[in-house]
Image: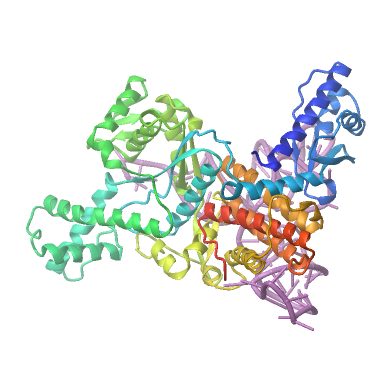
Length: 558
RNA sequence: GCGCCGGUAGCUCAGUGGAUAGAGCAACCGCCUUCUAAGCGGUAGGCCCCAAGUUCGAGUCUUGGUCGGCGCACCA
């Protein structure tokens, strides 16, 4: 059964369209009117409002208010979800839900249970969502933590909305940063035995403690075995040792963070099977590559780009851009996804357009790839931004963050802001276990409901409870909010913005707390008790499903 | 210099071309004999960065500025 909110919204559109169509026939006007129906901000303007009369006024050559009157007069409300509609000042038509709307909304939630919020909006479309894809040369930092929370919750939104989603981690286990990684490892290993006086790590190497630890652990196992080997042999041995450990750590750290991937896609596979060259050959066939200074270039300027881009360096090693094209070609043309979503840090924004340009040459529509650009995270401590640098090895890792704050708090915090806004992560607030912390606010609402349901377990609430007894403002407002859940998920999907779910939880918790303060349950007449318990259960179901999207725990007690 | 993102209450941020611009935190004043006070109610707080334009209507769209973040490698 479709949810009542969407049904009633569709109903308003249908009724208005039919009425306007009739008037078009009557006045001999051609129907080409683009209007909307939305939820007004102010309560007195009803549950839905439409601007149709204002938009259509000039077509009909009638004043908006006059036209609104005609539209309404032409639009019977019987057998609808609406009790009345009103016409207001510049020409708005405002609709008000009838009692059935609220009753059916509750029945729908209660009977849907764990599947409430699920829709067939996506019609099973195959979507690939790639996120985090942190470099396997070191631990994940705070930006990866944000990407993980956003990506994973967004994937859940897409699943709820009826998409067939696969979550993928792209492992950059090839290319330049791996060269740098093994060089850094080898130097640290060598230094365990050589002990050069006043040794300083070269500028172009990774400076982090994790490199030293790998070298030490490697030395524990192999001792001096590789000290006198060729540089190449030494680097390969220590790389073969350290890289799998790093990848395994990425996997287990993300799992701890409740992020589980369907696929781990290795960049090295694109090299092994010559996939990169096959894709470059296609670009060449289409006439979009050329040679210059010993390198092979992509003619990006031919597709509107500012400058051309190197695909294969003069040393014959392909660039990251080249493997990225091959990787995305694989997503669309090999594995057949109709849509790919990437979550990238905003510092990669310059890559979006050139990748799309290359893909369009390969026959992939630019719009098939959507890149969510996630703005940078700033760590704020005592009101001051903390300067972090991965190169200096003092960045906050995901792990060290999770030592400071519970996983729920981290996942919730990183989804409080929309991806495209700069995010100040307030470490002090996140660490605080108090009423200031918004995570506890929503979890407390859930626990309160569970408390009530437990205390009044003797009462039965059923679909046949007399829900029309719920008619206070707080009750109706709460029902209206939770009924909107499936719609809200679709909004999150359309805007690639899971923070809408966090806001939904916060608003829902606030409305429940208000209801709780005004409406008592225990001690009321039996039929009112069961109606209100039904409302509580419906809120519980909704919050629980929303928590599942965010992967935060629904605790029955605080 | 060019490009992307942002500027809304003291702070952190919502806001679909619509009606009277909202929330949380901080400040101040109240509310537990009751189903969980990690809660609720109230007060106060605004040249929506500036300027021009588009139209019935602009925080929202366009252009030009300004301030901040991030890019502009044969790095990833």
